[in-house]
Image (cartoon, rainbow, N blue to C red):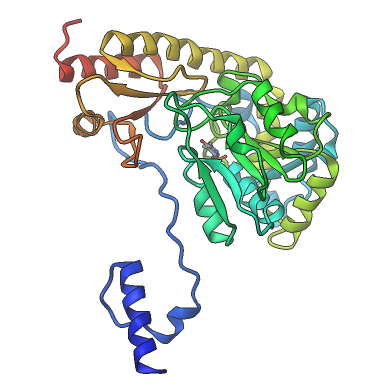
Length: 374
Ligand SMILES: *Cc1c(COP(=O)(O)O)cnc(C)c1O
């Protein structure tokens, strides 16, 4: 290789990787990505874990009691996930060919990026949002632009007008917890009839109106859900997309070109049991919502402000004490919340709603740290 080119490449590589070792020739053919950073999963006793938006309550007793016949692990699972697809279709009043299931909504969303975002025009999403979107865009070489939320952290509909390669946003948004109403979503759909619009409803069960009702009207809409938050099953990895049959078929074609057996057998059995237990599901969701409402009032009392949450977390900033300080002090007390060292949100904490007991302990910690008397 030409010396100059070699040294230029090495210089670039060093900059990108912050490493000084000699670049191997094969490096130039490797796909290099800056991965998504998941929240910490600390282990040990007496930890209060409010950092990854898991549900503090266990999955439905029907899930816990279900008997997956593990001898069946000998066989490949049902590649069509028929039973799970069928209960989900019934649950949402859709046809079976309108449901696509995957290994958590992260898998489903990645499949959607791969399948639907193939334009040379950039896809559009908010500047403050789920931090996996730009990672997938980079991974799949999809051009993208971000649009700034307004000062109240709301999405602005007209930012999503105009030519683009597709639109995606979570509703409620993460990490803000703010919900956009159906009029907003309709507005975005009306102005984007030639591309696919994806609404990531990871938190919709905790508040706000779902865009599922718009599927009848808009054939370019995809709505994505997960079992990880409202269904207390982050560990099993189930997510799904809903849309018109044609789009779902395209998703399946991509899936079968990549990995036919995404859903393992136990998750297919346990996922069905969860969907069947509507009473338990509603009970746990309303418990989380009640705790959130109490906790928001406590935050106000303690000098925090926050956008009104429609999710299972609150995104809060204190009037005087920096978020990073509170984050670090909490960590010392084995209380884990999420802190993002990113522009515009580096003075906010994202606090997952735990049990009443956990939230009371967190409030007591805040009172002590901020010097309040209860
Ligand atoms: C948690 C989350 C997901 C991913 O959830 P899975 O566990 O992969 O189903 C997707 N989108 C948003 C906005 C989330 O917060």
